[in-house]
Length: 135
Image 1 (cartoon, rainbow, N blue to C red):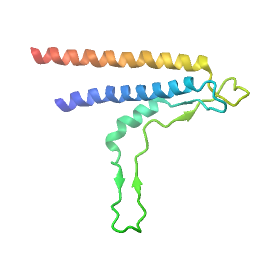
Image 2: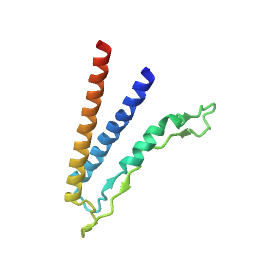
Image 3: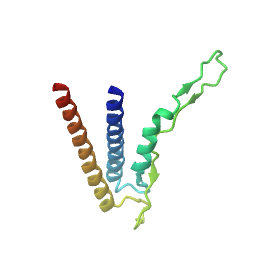
């Protein structure tokens, strides 16, 4: 039973982690709105969440053991579930900056509301579990 509860909550944990990561990317875009040649970044939340939920199917990171000082150190790292993409501007600026403040503000506010919604859902689920355990 605890496995089912853990699986249910892991979905929301992954969602919150990705929302927080997206918030940082959007904040970085806003902070660099006046930086020449800065390219706005973002990622597709839906595909990132699907990749994060498929994490159980992913292999763990691998590191090779060096038996000689002439060996080349190597490491196989599983890619991050949220692949950053460049945002295509509607009206690119003359200095090469692709940050559009109106778009960034809307995306930032939308992500904030969804983050708070995810937290509320988790809180309600935990309260429901606590109520069931107390009976």
